[in-house]
Length: 167
Image 1 (cartoon, rainbow, N blue to C red):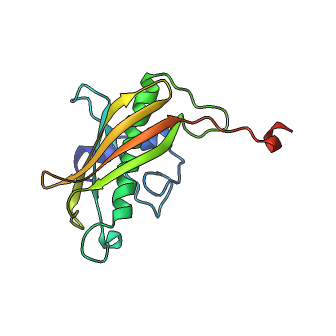
Image 2 (cartoon, rainbow, N blue to C red; image 1 turned 30 degrees about the horizontal axis):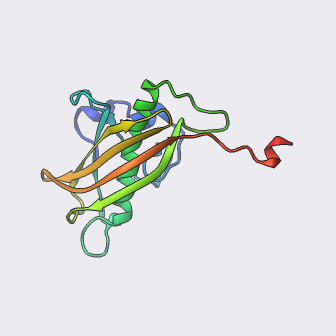
């Protein structure tokens, strides 16, 4: 799946959450997608890029990539940009939380079929942020055509204290 100079680089997932078992981007999930995203300093905004090649196990039954796999890739890839922006904003991870922010919403648009077993290009960039929310635009392209895009909302993670926790 990985070729070229990116093979030996540490991904944002490996940097921020090396023991995560998230299905889409967890480095510690041997059965997951194990998406690897990297910072992209060429855009002037907080952004990331990745390459991912699907396999026949990601088939939607019609010879294209399953929509759930596409949604997972867009969500998990946007995490890199969100976590980079959270770091710039000096958001710390709250006690009891695994990360400084989590996905709070995903508005997804499938624009055209996504070919199976082809290298996909993923890009994500921070569209806006506030004191408690980061919005990221994430896209999947193949053959220079955007196949799907998502606007992903990330909110600061503040674990709730329950009555059981207080006692």
